[in-house]
Length: 418
Image (cartoon, rainbow, N blue to C red; front, top):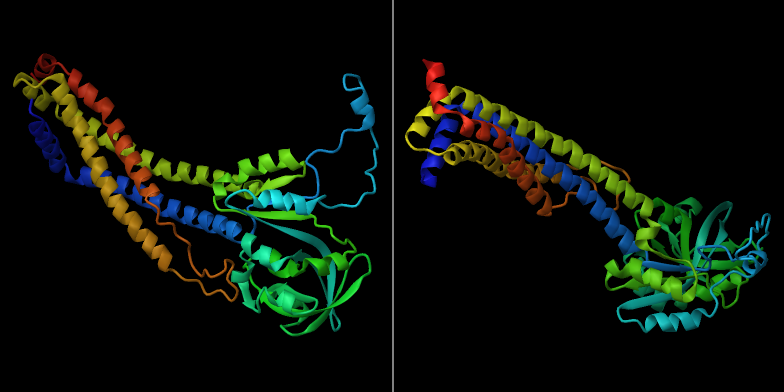
């Protein structure tokens, strides 16, 4: 039988049941629309977080520690024996990455890779009667600007001012507020070893992350080495890549080559990234359930149509319609409802995204830097996924009623009617 005739009959039956058809279409549209809006909201926040992490932090960090403790001599000597070693005290040794300059040269020979040495240590900053503890990071400005975007986050001063000023320091805006100090003020930095150095505030930065803005500062590498009494020592090498997707495999290669613990940005933020996976699973489950409920509504309507149209089915079969034609009539109804609902749902989802993106909150201090409203992703993926899921679920919901209609025997129908 010609397909246009099958489609015409299917659409005609939907038109004669306008109320039920509209309810089914709206159910699919609402499910698709809310799915798109929630998915865009979740993806927007996650993409913002990842971009901030990638923007602020280096992609790979080599630390002056080892992933597993050194094998004890007794265990090494009796590798196959039943040996248990307990209460081993760590040796008193100078921490730091050995031959850091050689490792830097080897890393910088890799295309698309920038590396910078740092020495990070705790200090107490003193300004007048106020004290505040921070982690002071010793950097080389010319290398540091290639591995982090600290310059972009600076709201006062420049990174080069560290070299232009003797014992200059750049503070996070939170640390400066705690001290009550500003650019040009003279403060005192005291290390745990009792070394005190007078420093001048030459810049301020604001990353939007409270932990960094309140707990970090930057100074020249040589200055921090003097403060910590660790001359020519660095305790980390920070790396930035042109292709961030290579961070994890390259980190494993570097760790295998140098032996020091090497963490990619994915490993450092693995807990939060795992939460994103759980968050996405919950979101897809809840919004997917809405679409499944809409699919059951389609199943119920088509089943009712099959029950009410048994005589029409008998007439169609007597006119030469095959079982395949009958099945296609009711399958087309499910597909049409799903297609119209998916199209309207995509429009609704787009409208919800724009509406949520326009909402603004009156924060004195925004939780997310530069953001006073919802962060929405405008990726096409939620539209494709939601629309496809709606079409598949609507079409699947019509399969059983369509098969039941195709199996009806016209003789039995006529006898039952008689």
